[in-house]
Amino acid sequence: GDDWVSGWIQLRIRPGKPVKKLVVKGWRPENSPAEATITVRIDDRAATVAHVGHGIFEIPVSFDPEPEADYFLTIRCDVEFSVAGDSRPLAYMLMELRHEH
Image (cartoon, rainbow, N blue to C red; front, top):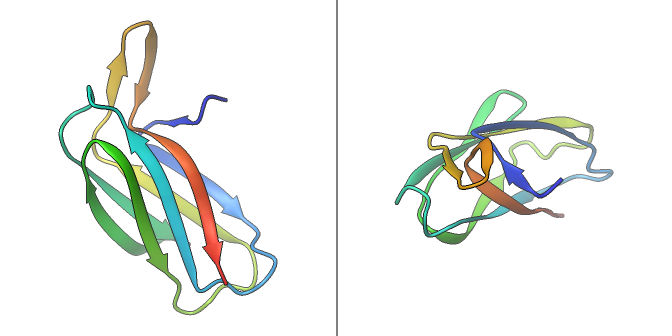
């Protein structure tokens, strides 16, 4: 894939050891709408809501309690847009999911 994400993504994550924090790193281009709201959920529990603009963003998500087993990560963005030559609804480019132990 090309790392573009639509307004909704769900991933099953297997951390391997307890996790204190997750950092979601992404990028929104200058031609996207000025502001978007991104909601991060862990196993259907709202964990963090962030307002992001253009450029690179990082969203820290603390875990309470720390998961030791698989969990579902859901990320929703309230704004989608399109670019010339691509018919997909796009929200942001996912650059990194980083666990901090």
